[in-house]
Image (tube, rainbow, N blue to C red):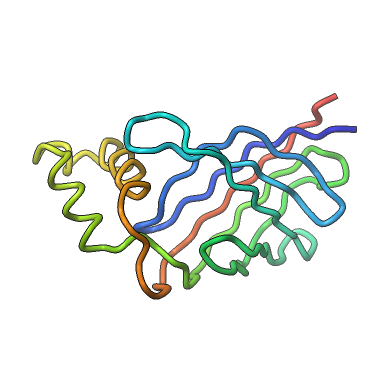
Length: 153
């Protein structure tokens, strides 16, 4: 039985990924996250496998291309039923785009009013994060992960 989920992963100064699909796997919940480049076109997908350990409260963990996550989390429903919600938030140390290069890209792409609009800024950060080099070392960030499951059958 296939389960379809919605995954959202976001973090301070972190590239934003848009979900395209997810499924339950023996090792956990696999989220296929679509990345978009500066031209608005897909730059590919990234598979993230999340593992939830606990009951109503627990921990959500994953090893990502940017570093490891181990976040306090809450679970509503049951993963086995396919109808659930997981919310996790916490601090992590992850590889991020180079901040100086990201700021220069944002300044070049945006009008001053765009930088004041949080929604426009989020889209611009996403576009620029795929155009600039990665930072040399992981940095501390606040991460929020939300996974919602509905039975796909």
